[in-house]
Length: 327
Image 1: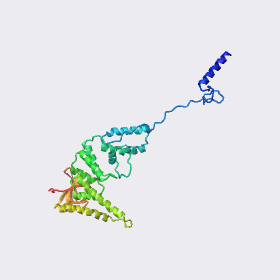
Image 2: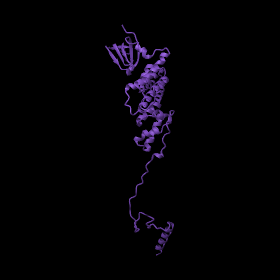
Image 3: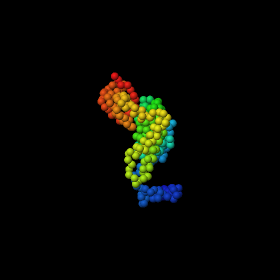
Image 4: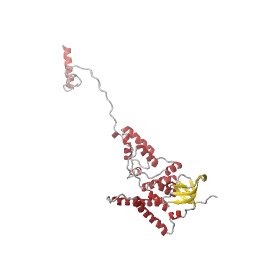
Protein backbone atom coordinates (compact mmCIF):
# COMPACT_ATOMS: atom_id res chain seq x y z
CA UNK A 1 0.00 0.00 0.00
CA UNK A 2 2.80 2.40 0.85
CA UNK A 3 4.60 1.41 -2.38
CA UNK A 4 1.54 2.31 -4.48
CA UNK A 5 1.34 5.73 -2.80
CA UNK A 6 5.01 6.43 -3.51
CA UNK A 7 4.54 5.53 -7.22
CA UNK A 8 1.49 7.78 -7.52
CA UNK A 9 3.30 10.64 -5.81
CA UNK A 10 6.23 10.23 -8.18
CA UNK A 11 3.83 10.24 -11.15
CA UNK A 12 2.10 13.41 -9.93
CA UNK A 13 5.45 15.11 -9.49
CA UNK A 14 6.51 14.19 -13.07
CA UNK A 15 3.17 15.43 -14.43
CA UNK A 16 3.64 18.74 -12.66
CA UNK A 17 7.11 19.15 -14.23
CA UNK A 18 5.63 18.36 -17.72
CA UNK A 19 2.90 20.98 -17.48
CA UNK A 20 0.30 18.56 -16.15
CA UNK A 21 0.88 15.87 -18.82
CA UNK A 22 1.88 12.32 -18.10
CA UNK A 23 3.88 10.05 -20.32
CA UNK A 24 0.65 8.30 -21.34
CA UNK A 25 -0.94 11.55 -22.51
CA UNK A 26 -1.57 11.30 -26.28
CA UNK A 27 -0.76 14.99 -26.68
CA UNK A 28 2.61 14.46 -25.02
CA UNK A 29 3.56 11.64 -27.40
CA UNK A 30 1.89 11.90 -30.79
CA UNK A 31 3.16 8.44 -31.79
CA UNK A 32 1.33 6.76 -28.89
CA UNK A 33 -2.08 5.17 -29.47
CA UNK A 34 -5.21 6.88 -28.08
CA UNK A 35 -5.66 4.11 -25.59
CA UNK A 36 -2.36 4.89 -23.94
CA UNK A 37 -0.56 1.64 -24.85
CA UNK A 38 2.94 1.97 -26.39
CA UNK A 39 3.61 0.77 -29.96
CA UNK A 40 6.80 0.27 -32.00
CA UNK A 41 6.90 2.48 -35.11
CA UNK A 42 9.62 2.87 -37.81
CA UNK A 43 12.03 5.74 -37.18
CA UNK A 44 12.04 8.36 -39.99
CA UNK A 45 15.48 8.67 -41.66
CA UNK A 46 17.04 12.13 -41.46
CA UNK A 47 18.52 13.29 -44.83
CA UNK A 48 20.69 16.36 -45.45
CA UNK A 49 19.11 19.27 -47.31
CA UNK A 50 20.08 19.91 -50.92
CA UNK A 51 22.73 22.60 -51.41
CA UNK A 52 21.53 25.55 -53.44
CA UNK A 53 23.57 27.91 -55.59
CA UNK A 54 22.67 30.88 -53.41
CA UNK A 55 24.97 29.53 -50.71
CA UNK A 56 28.01 29.78 -53.01
CA UNK A 57 29.56 32.97 -54.30
CA UNK A 58 30.55 32.98 -58.00
CA UNK A 59 34.03 34.16 -58.99
CA UNK A 60 34.44 37.92 -59.47
CA UNK A 61 33.79 39.42 -62.89
CA UNK A 62 36.68 38.60 -65.23
CA UNK A 63 38.88 41.51 -66.31
CA UNK A 64 41.95 41.50 -68.62
CA UNK A 65 44.51 41.66 -65.81
CA UNK A 66 43.24 38.42 -64.19
CA UNK A 67 44.59 34.88 -64.81
CA UNK A 68 42.11 33.42 -67.29
CA UNK A 69 42.98 29.76 -66.59
CA UNK A 70 42.49 30.07 -62.83
CA UNK A 71 39.29 32.07 -63.31
CA UNK A 72 37.81 29.40 -65.60
CA UNK A 73 38.65 26.70 -63.04
CA UNK A 74 36.85 28.64 -60.31
CA UNK A 75 33.89 29.19 -62.63
CA UNK A 76 33.60 25.47 -63.42
CA UNK A 77 33.84 24.65 -59.69
CA UNK A 78 31.01 27.09 -59.08
CA UNK A 79 28.90 25.40 -61.77
CA UNK A 80 29.52 22.01 -60.12
CA UNK A 81 28.63 22.86 -56.51
CA UNK A 82 25.75 25.13 -57.49
CA UNK A 83 24.09 22.67 -59.83
CA UNK A 84 23.93 25.09 -62.78
CA UNK A 85 22.52 23.18 -65.79
CA UNK A 86 25.07 22.76 -68.63
CA UNK A 87 22.70 24.52 -71.01
CA UNK A 88 23.00 27.68 -68.86
CA UNK A 89 26.81 27.68 -68.52
CA UNK A 90 27.34 30.03 -71.46
CA UNK A 91 24.73 32.51 -70.22
CA UNK A 92 26.16 32.59 -66.66
CA UNK A 93 29.72 32.94 -68.00
CA UNK A 94 28.66 35.92 -70.11
CA UNK A 95 27.12 37.56 -67.03
CA UNK A 96 30.40 37.16 -65.09
CA UNK A 97 32.49 39.36 -67.40
CA UNK A 98 33.62 42.94 -67.03
CA UNK A 99 32.16 45.41 -69.52
CA UNK A 100 35.38 45.73 -71.52
CA UNK A 101 35.79 41.95 -71.93
CA UNK A 102 32.10 41.48 -72.77
CA UNK A 103 32.34 44.00 -75.60
CA UNK A 104 35.24 42.06 -77.14
CA UNK A 105 33.82 38.53 -76.79
CA UNK A 106 30.19 39.49 -77.44
CA UNK A 107 29.94 42.21 -80.10
CA UNK A 108 26.81 44.34 -79.89
CA UNK A 109 25.39 43.04 -83.19
CA UNK A 110 26.13 39.37 -82.60
CA UNK A 111 23.01 37.42 -83.49
CA UNK A 112 23.40 34.18 -81.57
CA UNK A 113 24.63 33.03 -78.16
CA UNK A 114 27.85 31.02 -78.18
CA UNK A 115 28.31 27.74 -76.31
CA UNK A 116 30.39 27.49 -73.14
CA UNK A 117 33.12 25.57 -75.02
CA UNK A 118 33.30 28.33 -77.63
CA UNK A 119 33.33 30.89 -74.79
CA UNK A 120 36.35 29.20 -73.18
CA UNK A 121 38.13 29.04 -76.54
CA UNK A 122 37.61 32.74 -77.22
CA UNK A 123 38.50 33.80 -73.67
CA UNK A 124 41.75 31.83 -73.64
CA UNK A 125 42.53 32.94 -77.18
CA UNK A 126 42.24 36.61 -76.25
CA UNK A 127 43.32 36.63 -72.58
CA UNK A 128 45.09 33.28 -72.17
CA UNK A 129 48.69 32.65 -71.06
CA UNK A 130 51.55 33.84 -73.21
CA UNK A 131 51.87 31.99 -76.51
CA UNK A 132 54.99 31.30 -78.51
CA UNK A 133 55.76 33.50 -81.50
CA UNK A 134 54.83 30.66 -83.85
CA UNK A 135 51.46 30.16 -82.17
CA UNK A 136 50.73 33.89 -82.29
CA UNK A 137 51.60 34.12 -85.98
CA UNK A 138 49.41 31.12 -86.73
CA UNK A 139 46.50 32.69 -84.85
CA UNK A 140 47.13 36.03 -86.56
CA UNK A 141 46.82 34.53 -90.05
CA UNK A 142 43.54 32.82 -89.08
CA UNK A 143 41.82 36.06 -88.04
CA UNK A 144 38.67 37.08 -89.90
CA UNK A 145 35.70 39.33 -89.24
CA UNK A 146 33.17 37.32 -87.19
CA UNK A 147 29.42 37.57 -87.48
CA UNK A 148 28.19 40.69 -85.69
CA UNK A 149 31.72 42.06 -85.23
CA UNK A 150 32.11 45.67 -86.31
CA UNK A 151 34.99 46.89 -88.46
CA UNK A 152 36.41 48.80 -85.47
CA UNK A 153 36.35 45.68 -83.27
CA UNK A 154 37.91 43.54 -86.00
CA UNK A 155 40.67 46.10 -86.61
CA UNK A 156 41.40 46.23 -82.87
CA UNK A 157 41.67 42.43 -82.74
CA UNK A 158 44.04 42.39 -85.74
CA UNK A 159 46.18 45.09 -84.12
CA UNK A 160 46.37 43.37 -80.71
CA UNK A 161 47.23 39.89 -82.00
CA UNK A 162 49.49 41.19 -84.77
CA UNK A 163 51.61 43.38 -82.53
CA UNK A 164 51.97 40.55 -80.00
CA UNK A 165 53.16 38.38 -82.90
CA UNK A 166 55.62 41.08 -83.98
CA UNK A 167 54.37 41.45 -87.56
CA UNK A 168 54.87 44.56 -89.68
CA UNK A 169 52.33 47.29 -90.41
CA UNK A 170 52.06 45.98 -93.97
CA UNK A 171 51.13 42.53 -92.63
CA UNK A 172 48.48 44.11 -90.40
CA UNK A 173 46.90 45.82 -93.41
CA UNK A 174 47.06 42.64 -95.53
CA UNK A 175 45.46 40.48 -92.82
CA UNK A 176 42.77 43.08 -92.20
CA UNK A 177 41.95 43.22 -95.93
CA UNK A 178 41.71 39.44 -96.34
CA UNK A 179 39.44 39.04 -93.34
CA UNK A 180 36.74 41.64 -94.06
CA UNK A 181 33.34 40.44 -95.27
CA UNK A 182 32.57 43.25 -97.74
CA UNK A 183 33.82 42.49 -101.27
CA UNK A 184 33.43 46.12 -102.30
CA UNK A 185 35.56 47.27 -99.36
CA UNK A 186 38.15 44.63 -100.24
CA UNK A 187 38.29 45.94 -103.83
CA UNK A 188 38.68 49.52 -102.59
CA UNK A 189 41.62 48.49 -100.40
CA UNK A 190 43.25 46.76 -103.35
CA UNK A 191 42.95 49.94 -105.39
CA UNK A 192 44.08 52.44 -102.78
CA UNK A 193 46.56 50.27 -100.83
CA UNK A 194 46.42 52.18 -97.51
CA UNK A 195 49.84 52.19 -95.79
CA UNK A 196 48.59 51.79 -92.21
CA UNK A 197 45.92 49.79 -90.43
CA UNK A 198 44.28 52.99 -89.14
CA UNK A 199 43.85 54.33 -92.68
CA UNK A 200 42.58 50.94 -93.87
CA UNK A 201 39.96 50.91 -91.13
CA UNK A 202 38.76 54.42 -92.06
CA UNK A 203 38.53 53.47 -95.74
CA UNK A 204 36.54 50.28 -95.07
CA UNK A 205 34.21 52.11 -92.67
CA UNK A 206 33.51 54.70 -95.37
CA UNK A 207 32.75 52.02 -97.99
CA UNK A 208 30.46 50.07 -95.68
CA UNK A 209 28.57 53.22 -94.67
CA UNK A 210 27.98 53.90 -98.36
CA UNK A 211 26.63 50.36 -98.79
CA UNK A 212 24.30 50.74 -95.80
CA UNK A 213 23.04 54.15 -96.94
CA UNK A 214 22.29 52.78 -100.39
CA UNK A 215 20.31 49.79 -99.09
CA UNK A 216 18.41 51.94 -96.59
CA UNK A 217 17.41 54.40 -99.30
CA UNK A 218 16.12 51.53 -101.43
CA UNK A 219 14.18 49.97 -98.54
CA UNK A 220 12.41 53.28 -97.85
CA UNK A 221 10.70 52.95 -101.24
CA UNK A 222 8.86 49.67 -100.75
CA UNK A 223 6.88 50.09 -103.97
CA UNK A 224 10.07 49.97 -106.05
CA UNK A 225 11.32 46.60 -107.30
CA UNK A 226 14.41 44.96 -105.83
CA UNK A 227 17.51 46.92 -106.86
CA UNK A 228 19.74 45.36 -109.43
CA UNK A 229 23.27 44.41 -108.60
CA UNK A 230 24.57 46.98 -111.07
CA UNK A 231 22.98 49.80 -109.03
CA UNK A 232 24.85 48.76 -105.90
CA UNK A 233 28.06 48.46 -107.87
CA UNK A 234 27.58 51.92 -109.38
CA UNK A 235 27.13 53.46 -105.92
CA UNK A 236 30.32 51.87 -104.59
CA UNK A 237 32.31 52.43 -107.77
CA UNK A 238 31.49 56.14 -107.58
CA UNK A 239 33.11 56.24 -104.15
CA UNK A 240 36.09 54.29 -105.43
CA UNK A 241 36.49 56.74 -108.34
CA UNK A 242 36.50 59.55 -105.79
CA UNK A 243 39.34 57.83 -103.98
CA UNK A 244 41.26 57.28 -107.20
CA UNK A 245 40.81 60.94 -108.18
CA UNK A 246 42.77 61.91 -105.08
CA UNK A 247 45.74 60.04 -106.51
CA UNK A 248 45.44 61.82 -109.84
CA UNK A 249 45.12 65.25 -108.19
CA UNK A 250 48.28 64.58 -106.22
CA UNK A 251 50.17 63.59 -109.40
CA UNK A 252 50.39 59.93 -108.38
CA UNK A 253 49.43 56.99 -110.55
CA UNK A 254 46.47 54.94 -109.31
CA UNK A 255 47.00 51.20 -108.71
CA UNK A 256 44.47 50.33 -111.43
CA UNK A 257 46.36 52.46 -113.99
CA UNK A 258 49.62 50.84 -112.99
CA UNK A 259 48.19 47.32 -113.39
CA UNK A 260 46.72 48.10 -116.82
CA UNK A 261 50.20 49.04 -118.01
CA UNK A 262 51.43 45.54 -117.10
CA UNK A 263 49.18 43.75 -119.61
CA UNK A 264 51.37 41.94 -122.15
CA UNK A 265 54.39 42.05 -119.84
CA UNK A 266 55.96 39.34 -117.63
CA UNK A 267 54.68 39.41 -114.05
CA UNK A 268 54.83 37.33 -110.89
CA UNK A 269 51.56 36.59 -109.09
CA UNK A 270 52.12 35.74 -105.41
CA UNK A 271 49.36 33.61 -103.86
CA UNK A 272 48.19 33.44 -100.25
CA UNK A 273 49.37 29.81 -100.17
CA UNK A 274 52.98 30.90 -100.83
CA UNK A 275 53.16 29.69 -104.44
CA UNK A 276 54.37 31.96 -107.26
CA UNK A 277 52.88 31.97 -110.76
CA UNK A 278 55.00 33.66 -113.40
CA UNK A 279 53.93 34.42 -116.94
CA UNK A 280 52.70 37.03 -119.39
CA UNK A 281 49.77 39.05 -118.02
CA UNK A 282 46.94 38.59 -120.52
CA UNK A 283 43.98 40.02 -118.61
CA UNK A 284 43.18 41.62 -115.24
CA UNK A 285 39.90 42.95 -113.82
CA UNK A 286 39.01 45.15 -110.85
CA UNK A 287 38.77 42.13 -108.53
CA UNK A 288 42.36 41.06 -109.37
CA UNK A 289 41.16 38.01 -111.29
CA UNK A 290 44.24 37.26 -113.40
CA UNK A 291 44.74 35.48 -116.73
CA UNK A 292 48.33 34.45 -117.56
CA UNK A 293 50.00 33.03 -120.65
CA UNK A 294 53.15 30.86 -120.71
CA UNK A 295 52.59 30.17 -117.02
CA UNK A 296 55.18 28.64 -114.68
CA UNK A 297 54.53 27.53 -111.09
CA UNK A 298 57.22 28.10 -108.45
CA UNK A 299 57.47 26.98 -104.82
CA UNK A 300 60.22 28.44 -102.61
CA UNK A 301 61.90 29.78 -105.73
CA UNK A 302 62.03 26.38 -107.43
CA UNK A 303 60.24 25.66 -110.72
CA UNK A 304 57.60 22.97 -110.15
CA UNK A 305 55.47 22.88 -113.27
CA UNK A 306 54.79 24.63 -116.56
CA UNK A 307 51.32 25.49 -117.89
CA UNK A 308 49.96 27.14 -120.98
CA UNK A 309 47.21 29.56 -120.07
CA UNK A 310 46.12 29.94 -116.43
CA UNK A 311 43.31 31.76 -114.64
CA UNK A 312 43.78 32.81 -111.00
CA UNK A 313 40.92 34.06 -108.84
CA UNK A 314 41.50 37.38 -107.11
CA UNK A 315 40.71 36.11 -103.60
CA UNK A 316 43.81 33.86 -103.85
CA UNK A 317 46.15 36.69 -104.89
CA UNK A 318 48.45 38.27 -102.31
CA UNK A 319 50.18 40.69 -104.71
CA UNK A 320 51.32 41.14 -108.32
CA UNK A 321 54.79 42.38 -109.26
CA UNK A 322 56.88 42.79 -112.38
CA UNK A 323 59.69 40.31 -112.93
CA UNK A 324 62.20 39.39 -115.57
CA UNK A 325 61.51 36.25 -117.57
CA UNK A 326 64.16 33.59 -117.42
CA UNK A 327 65.90 32.79 -120.64
